Length: 181
Image (cartoon, rainbow, N blue to C red):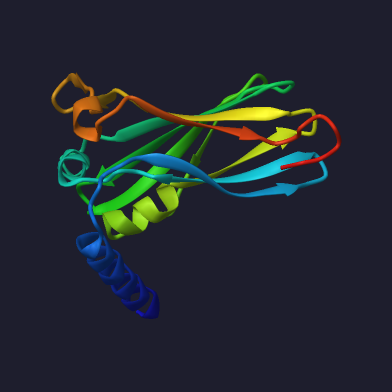
């Protein structure tokens, strides 16, 4: 009961914030933190998704929203996964899945369910990468992928609705002279 009430208030504030925001619908990537760990660097990434009513209508119609998130580093292996936002029409809830594409094995992780799309987007637009210590620079890239509408037996390209195919940001992690940025 308390959790539902908390989600309701949080969703209301997110709706009001989106409604009162300037509404530029501009997508961008930001790296909110870089911290050193035992194995390398931990990057906390966020995306300003550029959400709009057309994207929401497509997701609510049961067409998943798919992004390929990648970290392409100098001196390290690339890290890539596909994140997909779904709307369960029967349960009227949102969730997302991460499909990790790795050298050793592929794996899938599923999020919790969310009663509102803005609550799901809050977590959908945040992710982490762990880079090795040898990384000097890293190109973080997010690419919109075509989605499969199984009920319509069609593939849907949401590029025109989102406004671009991909966004990227280059981050200098280690300058090579012992100093870090």
